[in-house]
Image (cartoon, rainbow, N blue to C red; front, side):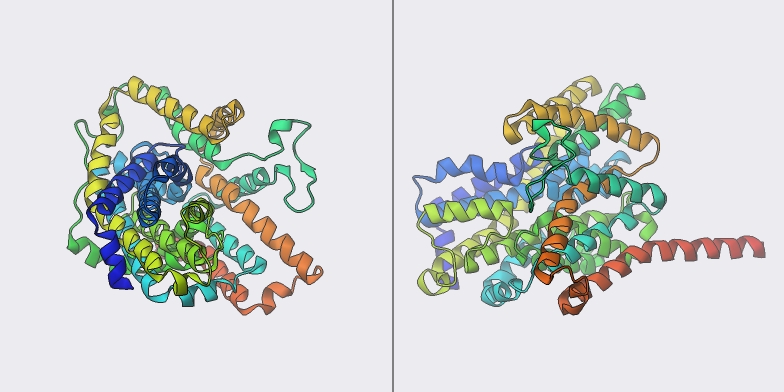
Length: 502
């Protein structure tokens, strides 16, 4: 069946569609606001006349490309093209600002490709086993998993821990706005109908990162892109990362791909949580954690290998159990059904060649990232070489279009501009925009997991400690949160001792 899957994907027309799908995904992912979900939806009408295998493989290719494409704008414009690329901005943009944009782009493409290939190969071998394991995750584990993602705050706010925690609390508060998902009660809507559905984190992310960055540059009178600190004029293209770099950081590549695959398998977890957990683990295990947030190569690798690893992981419950592994997987599930593919436990028995065709198509699309990613990054980077007034106009325009396209609502555009001022003043007074975004993204997951488990257990909080998997995740979260502060305390003590000796 694996061999048949190879033969299906390597048909000339199918191969061409995989190339086109991956290229479109990269392009859409690089445009702020056009998420992986939107990229798949826009491609869906073009698949109606295709054969079943061709249609599902091209949609998966779009998914793979979009997850990688989000890192391009995250690095060049400090605007995550997709929510999964939020962690990539932490070190990708600082690298670009000191003139290392080509290397940062090369690292993101290589890590994305590595993570996608790894998860695809794991899926081919272990799909049925992993799907059964994923079903053990319930509300308690989702709550613990969201706390593990939030522990990343300690890593990104090590220099201003109190302000980072306050920023995260603000994000958690914002995530509660709207109708209560469990009781249906209105919360913090102040009688405004547009707040009923809550505040979407994508307009917040675009405003707080991209538009706020425009304000900062305008206030500094930066009139050309080449005048930015550390920036370089001329064309920027992704640097080809050699095998020596992969060997140097092999632990980060491998560990992040494993984390991404495992988290991706968990239904509804997604690439955002995978990237944040992987980034936090990279900081915790690094010998030089002080480099993170200032342009550390491992930060980019950890984020991108994990979020692309989550692609293959999310397809496991989708295909083998018929349970969407995330937002994009839910769209893919509907598309698969429309084309006659019946996801679920009987898939391996009735249509095994289809399953392996999809997984092999994902591996092929991940390999294509090496070539297509460099090409798309080169074309997109032309924006950075424009005089800054033009570049700023394009960034704001893309932000407006991206925010409006979510729900075809001007409300999201107003939200984007409101949070652009929040992002500007956060940076000015050294609060953490990233911590706030993490709070917004993970807040709903944490709250729903906590409340659902308490409902099931009759209000018994000890249920979180009696579930072995949940308890393990709690312990890892505590270690991940404490480690950066412990290291900072040890470093401070060491410096004080050295000063006394002198």
